[in-house]
Structures are given as structure tokens and as C-alpha cells.
Image 1 (tube, rainbow, N blue to C red):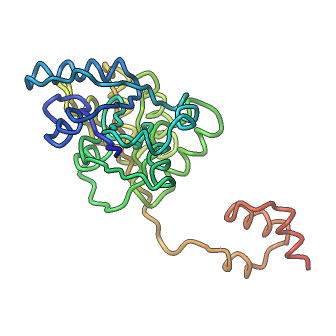
Image 2 (cartoon, rainbow, N blue to C red):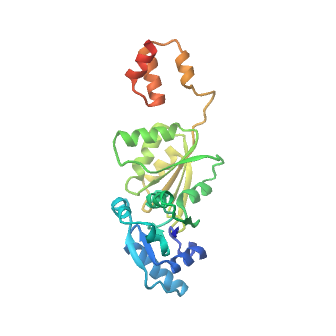
Image 3 (cartoon, rainbow, N blue to C red):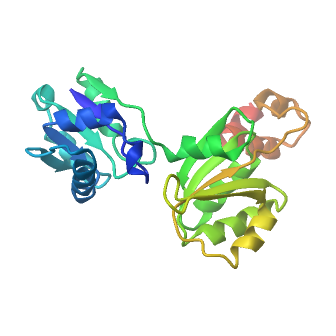
Length: 269
């Protein structure tokens, strides 16, 4: 059987009894980084007087997961197998999903233990009353892909939640400010750790404040959604508009992802 075990994102006391039990019973532990996991087990051993000896460790991360999966079979999971990422919930902006998919496809029993997660913690801390959100992990470091993703987040009618490193945080805040300086955003750093701190204000105020502040630490950003007035156009609405076929084809291509030329030919038939 496979168990996905969440690990603390900062405060060691956030480990659950179920998670400790699973780690104690584990014979094989797949790890995002074996060094990080072994260090965590040493800390847990000292804090809770536990013995994590006689464990087999196997690295399993985004760069080697496909190769590791080729070596696995159902017999691998006749023992107690655990997967842990470096911190937080596996599969949420962390490796692990392909291992779960392997179990599903091969009818292997698996379970996910609930636990620490920066996304949900930041969402609950933000004070926004919106009931839906989209999580984007880390944006691309640069380029058109980053710009288009951020534009889509800023135009969404759902809260946008993303991660950012301290090295690129000020750049992100400036980009948000340049799109809409009055947009309310919430930021929290070092969740559950000693220097946890949160901020909530307009993009302009936050950017101006952060320009002269120590912004070390890992950050979660929650962005207020756009409030739409009226109704968005759909495909049928655009088809009914009195527009030149080329213009109409371009609009439909944006909405559907299909090729403009293909849609244009259909319109001209």
C-alpha cells in the first residue's frame, strides 16, 4: 500500500499522529529529497522519542520520476510504502501525482493523509469571502508565458493564489500594480514559522511599502478577483455579431484555442 504523508511547512508540531504512525510503519519511503526527509525524521525522533531506523529511502522527484516508475510493479507495494515531499502536501505544487496515477492504473491501494498546506492556510488567513479560487504555483520566471498567466489571474472572477520567492517578489508586486494598482492583495511569508507575517492592502500601497523592506522568506500571494458587471460573451454571442469574418474568426480562435484559419473557412462556407 502507498500512503502520501504531508510534512510540516515550518512548525514541527504540525505533524499529525496519523502521519507519524505512517512514517513509523513505513518500510520504503519515497522522498522528493532523501536528505531533507532524513533530517526531518531525525528532528521528529528527538522531539517525540521515536525510532525511524531500518527504513529504505528512494528519491522520487520531478527529474527522475519517469525513470523510477519504470522500475516499479505491484510487488513493490506489498510492503508499507510512503511518499513525502520536502514540506507540505504531496502533489500540491510538489511531486507525487504520477505515483498516485501509477497506483490507480495498476489497482494498487493508496491513501492520502490530510495535513499542512500553505495554499489553504493562506486562503483562510486572507479574509477574502470569495468561495472559489485558482492555484497557480510559481509563475514562470520571465517571458510572455509569465505575462499572459498573470494577466489571466488579474482578469479572473476567482481569487488567484500563487507562490513566489523573495528574489522575484518585488517584480511580481510591480507587475500587479501596473495592471491594477487598486487591486487588493494579501501576502503571507514563512507560514507557521517564527517570522510569519502577513499584509493586506492595495497593490500600490503594498509595492511602495515593500520597496524599502526586508522581504526574505517564502511567500504566498492571494489576489482579489475582478468583479464583472454584466455577462461575458460566449461563442454563440460572437457568431451572431455583425463583424467581418476575419475578425470573428480571431475572436473565436481566442475563445476556443482552435486555429483562426480553420474557423475562418467554416464561417465562409
